Length: 389
Image 1 (cartoon, rainbow, N blue to C red):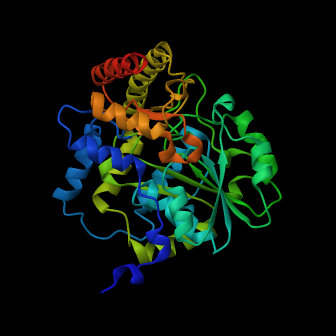
Image 2: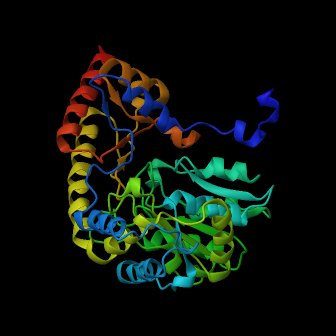
């Protein structure tokens, strides 16, 4: 069999994840410190684990409805109202296998071959390949460090064409840690009002913002709810990555179409995870706050240390990543990461894994303990000293 001739062109041309490449090398390297994966180092709160165990003990292991347990969808709606002043009904909510599936469903639901998808970069690695698999045309918009990696109305206007179908809003952002406040979102909303452009708002890090002001969803702005697919999930805020539980909220016609695709591809999210998710939403506000406080301490520790070393790092206000510039070293992002990995056994991710505009930067995750981060910073400082020698 000549498999190369049989395989789908779009699938073959997908760029492999730059995150997994470095993670896989680090996993095989003895005494390596990995700061590459965005996975909380906290255990899932006990009340959530207990709910999952109880559901298994009671034999609640059947398929749920395609859209997810009604009780979970209703609890999601109450949570979004309570935490972010967003009003949805359970019929406007779809439970998915992680936020990643919700992203996939949204893009497939709207994008026809030739349609353009505006993707602010640097950003999460999955947006672009999912777009190309549908036959869509990615339109990257490079975000700038001097703008704190925020999308501006001027950049959005310049990217829009008659073929624009979808804008992806990746805030709080992986990898930069950038956020969009209400005053940043309003000019974006003004550009979109009156158009037929939909918004995919990936808000998986919505609970992990720092400072006194809480996250604001673009769906909360006038005229934006009707054109927004809100993607959220349990992985980051509740330390539930392996439970694979997420959701999308959108106007009912959109959710119906996404559910039809979900029905054929997945059937339903895992029932055990759904029962656990109900308890997470009801009881874990204090756990979220505890984890956010710890992440904030780690964030400040890294930003201060990196700037002191000469790796200029703007202060991220969301998620659990820092995105320092390594341009002062004269190395490319990929070369810096490879040399740091093999010379000092520290794994970080080149900025180019998140789009071409990430060149000159690296991503460091602070979803690790201070002790872990301290040793990594010590090795990075040694590496920089040796580079100058």
